[in-house]
Amino acid sequence: MRDKTFAVINEKIKAGKAVVVTAEELIALVQEKGVSRAAQEVDVVTTGTFAPMCSSGAYFNFGHSAPRIKFNRVWLNGVPAYAGLAAVDCYLGATALPEEDPLNKNHPGEFRYGGGHVIEDFVARRPVRLKALGYGTDCYPRREIETVVTLDDINEAVLFNPRNAYQNYACAVNTGPRTLYTYMGVLKPNLGNAHYSTSGQLSPLLKDPYFRTIGVGTRIFLGGGVGYVVWNGTQHFPSLPPLPEGAPRVPAGGTLAVLGDLKQMSPQWLRGTSMLGYGATLSVGIGIPIPILNEEICYYASRTDAELYAPIIDYAEAYPNRKPGNLGFVSYAALKSGRITVGGKEVPTAPLSSYVKALEISAILKRWISEGRFLLGEPVQLLPGPDAGIVARTLEIRDTERSER
Image (cartoon, rainbow, N blue to C red; front, side):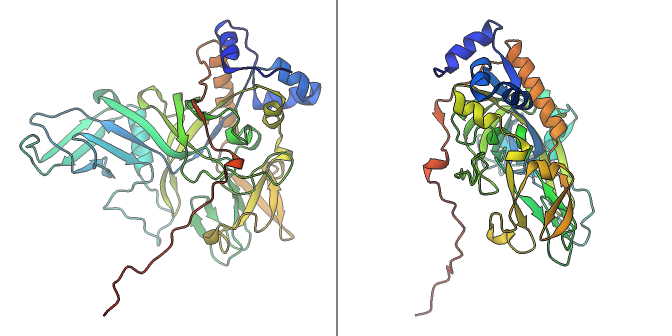
């Protein structure tokens, strides 16, 4: 078949003639008709994921007070935000914690209210306490302000997440003798459980593993509103697949930096989350449309949970060195069955991501496109793929003390 184009597909969307299916529906269609026929019939495949994404946050412009102030330190509901920007701008990270409530490892079961919860409060239109200190200048003489704001009171509120939608995260286990409290949840000792955090056959970047369609300018479902891919995410290390099906061989693979108007979003798809013994984060809903430009794209978009694999990582030993698959690989079909076998032992599994919500996101995005309300954003630059040769760097610790002479 001749390759389709973004322009042709968008014209079909405008005319209400585009054939749009979810990734789950494409799987069934390919099994029935084959890749070649499905590629001819389908124009767009929708994907989805909903999971904790720590590298998230939002920047705000609150508008000027009278007299004016230049923020030097800022707190939102007691959570510190970064104020090293212009006068009344700040950036709030999802994992930020109140200064007076540092993480106490002796009480790992405590709920932690942090930046992700503040973002959810804003999106839910709840009042948020703003406190800011300034140092006083001729143009910004005010030194302190305390007030209550809501999302609709402020000029701009933009969700800007430096690293979201991990292509293929690890299956985390713990072979050690003590319980571990991690961003992958509570890992019980002696292979007591296994956690994973990827939606498998709905996962956006597993459906386009070579980044043939995703890049700067890709329009996406973000937090219940419309957002955009603005760059590759941090720790973007796309890798060649170890298997014909196209699953990356490292836990991270590709990642996305995404941006969108927080005022369009919903607390249903941006949820402040507290991880026991770890701290706060933000659970984010993301859906990406994949245009079926040719048979190759259709093939990868139609891979099933049985064909997509996650590396099993022992967080007791291997995690600090990030050894991918040190305990082997496991299919998402096996993970979703509720039990896997690791080192000859049967281990119960549980997801941190929600497949139900991922499926709902893919269905919402399908409806938006089918109704002509959402056009595809053709990337001005595709993201680096597995052939880009990107190498992961590690922080080298150097002794900076001057030697005595």
